[in-house]
Amino acid sequence: MLREEIDVTNRIVWRGVVLAVLLVAVAWAAGIDGKWKAEYTSPDGQARQTTFTFKVEGEKLSGTAAGGAGEAPIQEGKVSGNQISFVVVRNFGGEDVKFNYKGTAAGDEIKLTVNVAAMDRTFEMTAKRIN
Image (cartoon, rainbow, N blue to C red; front, side, top):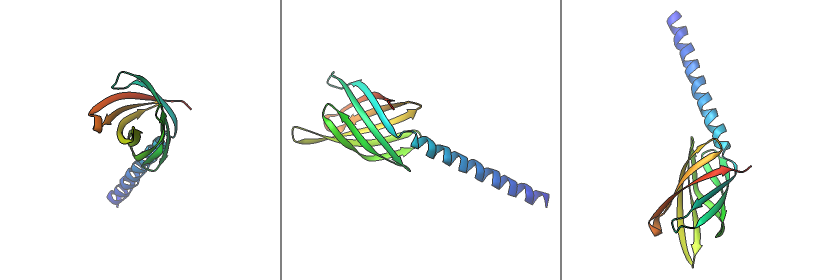
C-alpha cells in the first residue's frame, strides 16, 4: 500500500514539474513580443539599423522587419525555448533576396546570425528591446 502511494505521489510531482516547465517556456516566448532594434555593420561595411516587430503565438513567430530597404513581413518564423528563426525576403533591383535569421534570446537581447545565401554572406547582429 505504501509503495503505491509513493508511486502516485511521484507521478503527480513529475506531472507538476513538466507542466511548470511548459508554462515557463510559453510565458518566455510571449516575452519576445514587441519591438526590437538592431544596429550593425553589414557585409558591405555599411552601418545599418533594422527594427523588428515580433508577435509570438505558440511556437509561431510573425511580424515585420523595417530598415533602409523598407518594411517586409517575417516569414517561416519559429520559436523553441530561447531559440528563434525566421526569414525576411527583400527585393533589390527586381530580384528577391532571402535573409535567414537564427538567434538566441536572453533577457532584453537577441543575438542573431543572418545568412544571405544568394550572396554567400553571413553576419551577426544583436537586437535590443525598445518597448
